[in-house]
Image 1 (cartoon, rainbow over the protein chains, first blue to last red):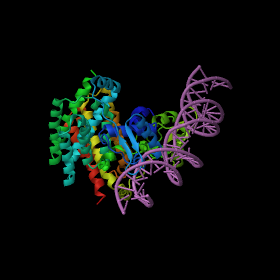
Image 2: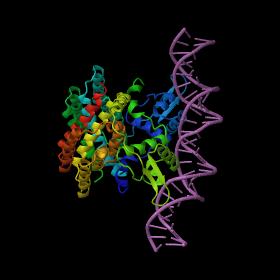
Image 3: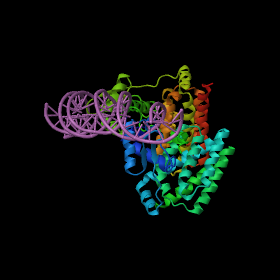
Image 4: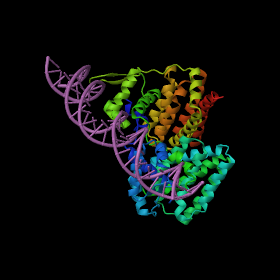
Length: 242
Length: 242
DNA sequence: AATCAATGGTCCGATACCAGACCATTGGAC
DNA sequence: GTCCAATGGTCTGGTATCGGACCATTGATT
């Protein structure tokens, strides 16, 4: 009768809500900064708007912001043209830290890498499949050139933005959310990888290949180029598990 | 400075929590039944265990169960060997209902179909890529034969189970959860499609092709067969949008 | 200098949700 | 026949979260 209760519940009967709205809110904002959606000095959306977007009461959001303020990640100013401003800079990459973080993730690492691979290669394919407007093409191209001209300290941030931009091009909010989520899970690890000029050149070539394939609608190449690009960092991270 | 505030928040600043733990719980359980995880007469996990799995208090879960009981979907019995039992049967497919539901989903339909395509083709590829244990292969094969021998009223339920089984084979919980989620979103629509013997034959051939490719590790075929299979129903649903 | 719109800062009552203890029922095991 | 383990049923106190009203501050505009 219920011999199979253990069977599939894993996917369906997963937690309805994250334990704690406050902590989750802190994480989300921090992730947004680490993912490069907001850079140093940028202003976050007004509290009322942000609370609505996060589906959380303004009080809860404010507690989260206070928490971030206490950690010197943001700073609030009153008055018109005031707001909450990012005062966080990515810490310098640290291989020791990376090794520790990789081991801490344990079995979850492989899950996150698989999830990312499926979503991002799929997103690249879908983006290549779509008819893009001139404006979309232009914005996307700008993301690429921004990334190529990035100073080292901005590289990781603009890299994230480039990848998220591809997800947005698919026109599928769920897909974009999935890509963002998977990147959030891996972001601390990716940020801990030192930015070596040799790796940057290699990545840059891959980024160009991905962008070109997407813009020309070359579906198989978009997928393959993305897969190669992702496997490079995945292999690096897996190396720390050995 | 914040000119790009509208840029990417969509993916990152999405709601932290689903509006309502109670309603969400009702949905989850109902979806589990509709997805075929539990059939008529099956016993759900004990309240304490299920509440823990769903990350919800027992009280909240019980409210949800009462709600389902009031709707004649489940039935509870006390005592050892008691429990909560499913008393729900899928309603007969109804094309009029289908047309209405498709229109109700509106723009969300395309999103859900894209999301499903990416996740399920990716899952099929990952499943094909893995080394499967003898036990996994056997269980998976059983799912396929169950489906092929299914009486019409069980067809949709076992079809869902087959697809979820593929997602489980990937060994990636996140991917499996994603597939389950995307199927939940489309399930009411899929269930409303009449089961015609001609379609079943067609689907059966596709299912076999998928299963064979996965079991033999033929990655490109696994992906392509899955894509063809999914596009068939997607095209049918899109047809109702006009 | 006065105005005002946009923003953060504060407060309070209502309530959904939780954690855990305890009760009631059932049918198999002994 | 008695016991008992597993299950659903009930209650209570505590708290996180909500939602909405109201206050305080600021700097561009006039």
